[in-house]
Image (cartoon, rainbow, N blue to C red):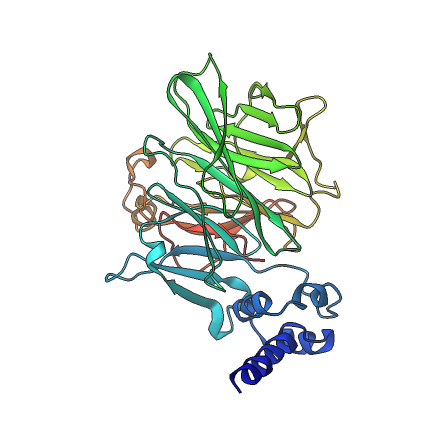
Length: 371
């Protein structure tokens, strides 16, 4: 009797996972962004049915992740989405002990790479699935992380982290879900005395490591050869990401008085591995047309089609600007910097900037790729 009940239950689950395309489309029409994401995590046919979805939105949702305003718990995180601003699901909160004092390193396709002290893990906020990764050494300071994604398994496939040890030794670690230890690679740079990791990105069999000085060090997993690319002369501070199978950079001048990026100086560059040079892309280039760029202070950056040619960033305002508007004159250099951030975007075509949300965010808020 028990076997029969289990068989019936399994058949129900199987039918649920393999919903016909038309049913999937009808469900998508009636759900908001977060419910759609939860649905996608349990319906096996969701991804394939979405490819032919007739009402497919041109732009993925814009989401920000930040610690929830909960005095009783530091393990609550809010996920805020502008695409559902008129619905109940504008925000949802995840409360898990795993999130206690955890920091975001990278996000992609609804998965988060999180760091908590010396532990690393992958987490899906919709399904609550957690994949533990090998611990890192307690001697590590700041390090960068990212992962590649398997569209067939619908989960991260390979995780990359990199940091600098003493005496300019670059440490690169690679692990797959289920691994107990990191596969380690080292590169000694005699010219570097004190530097920190900024980004690590992977395309195919090559891993690209960026430090906070703009130097790029590439490791080829096939040939096991390291290659170093110096930062271009007169280059500005930049954000790095993978876009359509290529390494992209969004550099910007910084306002020396407020320490914030100058939106008018945003540009888009592509890395040419053959010439080891950065090539500036024109605004008419098909690779940047109708593409938006999401910049985080911690290096977790990404691009998305459909929002127009815009750059999204988190701006830390000067507290004194409010008093200036009230007639209290103060030097800009004397104005204290706010503890909160504003979410803003800069239209690269019309050269205009404006706030995206009507409220403020914490210092640890980040754009997240939940599409």
